[in-house]
Length: 450
Image 1 (cartoon, one colour):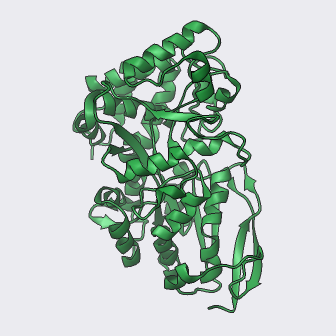
Image 2: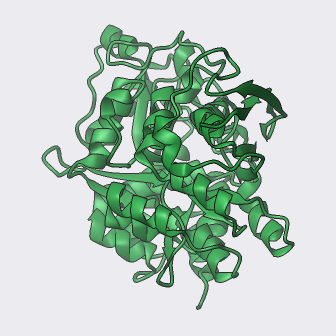
Image 3: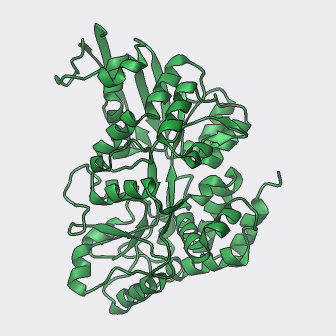
């Protein structure tokens, strides 16, 4: 055991990420909060006293706080200090930083398409044997493939999410006699019923996310492609085996447009249709708490945002303040299919301490640490679903570990010029009034030719 350890604690969260990190010391295996730290789970990582690893990503606010907490004991036991900085501009800036030699040691990349772009630029360090051994043990082959480019494995997955959840108030549903829909037609009928009652708009939506504004709308389209036309068409679309302006994709856009472009449907508690573009995705569902809308489409990770101050005033449970059901299939007896996402810690600096951190982040130890802190899930097969912070997240982990048809977020798999650019921008233009055909034609024209 080491005679001295250092630990970084989150001191604050800046508007675009984690703020200053305070450095404190302690002796032996005694943590700076006065509690004992069991270093047994971290012995395999050795010690690297005095080494620092910088990490950047899109994870902000309370989620960033919990991320820092998840590796606190690892820092104590290995001596490696981790300096995390989050930014909503990470996706737009990371390639520029890498090209200029100013990238962090590790970047938590939320898109396989962006990972491919960074790898093609020659900026990434291939994953070490320790990382690869972990991904082979704890993750499916599909997840490993998402971290691979041109035959080289660059990153194990980190966290995951199930997309396509529809958040609602169980008490409102009970009071008004609403039934959870089992088909897309039933969802449409429920939305029309709420709209006709006139108390409030049925849906609240927020598409704003800094440089990534528009991405929540891409999730809607992807969910409808997968449900209306199935996984084979979804795969063909994502891989550009059919064009972006294929009639099947036009149909999915128009199905989504019946909600997002319809002033009778949105934007409850916020404003007219146009306010979707300016409303932050983090706050967009909160009008449900005030009875100003009834439905909000967002991923499993949105659980964190129901208590923005980090408390537990709003419970996530079937009989709680909020709960969620998955966007239903076309037919009630159709197999359930879901989209989802994840992050990938890629390395820009070739150093043993960097790979030690990445190996830890790919382990079942880290995954259980982070899931236990609340608000997120992982597709790591070593995660105990009972560690999840709510029944919904436990359900989400079981979905990832089960036989449900799963497809990674389509825009995240597309080339960066599309999935992290023209598709996002196209959603904004489309919600702003541009026709479906003009929108999909413009996105198709942006698809790289090689």
